[in-house]
Image 1 (cartoon, rainbow, N blue to C red):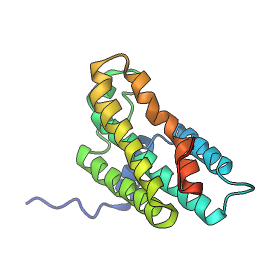
Image 2 (tube, rainbow, N blue to C red):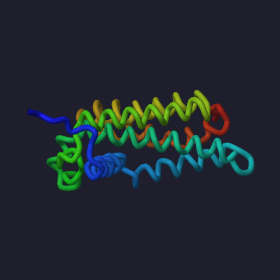
Image 3 (cartoon, rainbow, N blue to C red):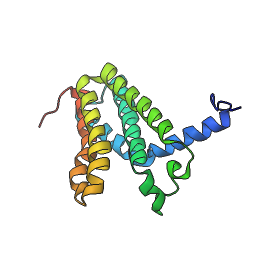
Length: 174
């Protein structure tokens, strides 16, 4: 007789959460969020309002982490063959594809909800477009198709300061 593995025992849940955290690429996303914070500071005279600053930061952190995890799902076969990435949780079997997609959806959806409800709709939409540009256009379409992917995909990498600006001002200006 087969028994269900859910709910997960606490040590297994900790390992899965750690694996998901690693797939969110915290070191890379720290730079993304830092540049978004710079955009927030530049968007206002003086210091940004703390509740708005924190909500925007949290929302961007969540969506950026979600995009990184989706990137790991798309590239898991390639990651398994590369010396630089073979240690990642998906190629090692520490977490499954479906689990990762569910967690990424919840994290990204939560981040977008925070941006929409507590920041503004423009920032939420721009962040969604950035997610789509990185996870779908850059990772899934351009990366396997052309070495020029980095030039076109660079637009997603340039968006965080714009997201920060939009979070504070509610607009994107020249």
